Length: 260
Ligand code: NAD
Image (tube, rainbow, N blue to C red; front, side, top):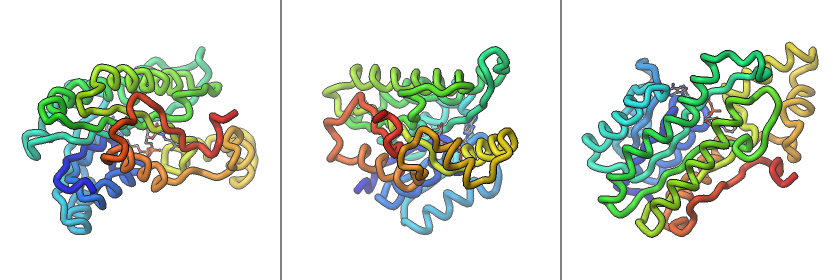
């Protein structure tokens, strides 16, 4: 149980981040939800978590492409909840193009949101975790943090970088009650992947079922998507006391992809 602990989940209005926020709230953690928008429905998610789980939840708008905003998100959390016990760096975007055509603005955005944001939030959170003698940093990397695919140069580079950051932060904090690990999902059916299915259907002319089986899940031997709840379950475990000696490692949830 995480009763009384405070967790930040970046990019938590949709997909994997939302499922992680719900799972941590179900364990009793107070939650800071985040995205770059400021819509009524963003705040409604926080209100729903409070109503469902009797915890305190707040939505804080912060653009994870902006390093100062990343750091401020952590400081606002500490001001409001007096702690940051669990930091889940989940916000991420994708763009697919051959390296020679890869738009520079997309490269920069993927580097900023998928990699540098975790540097900034971690740098801001670690001093508070050291003071508390406790902390869990969980980075949502990807099978693409361990393996490459064509046309995903920025994403693969950022996710490999995130795995490297994970190991370094783990070493710097070993023995201080703070762990840092990366979860590496294979394909999970979220809005981020839905767009890739639609793009690949257009390119190949195949139907949806064939595109999913033969194109999207080509490298995922189970031929099944991982679910957002399975990713969230791994995060809850890594946040628990049972995982106190797991640090600096990657946990693959990829239907066998990286066993190959
Ligand atoms: P998603 O598109 O459903 O959700 C992404 C979340 O990040 C949303 O809440 C979005 O609002 C937020 N976000 C985007 N840009 C942001 C910004 N600039 N500032 C703050 N928040 C921002 O995607 P998802 O599939 O749930 O992906 C979540 C994470 O999991 C990403 O890091 C992604 O790379 C990773 N991942 C996803 C898959 C998959 O198959 N879906 C596989 C491996 C890893």
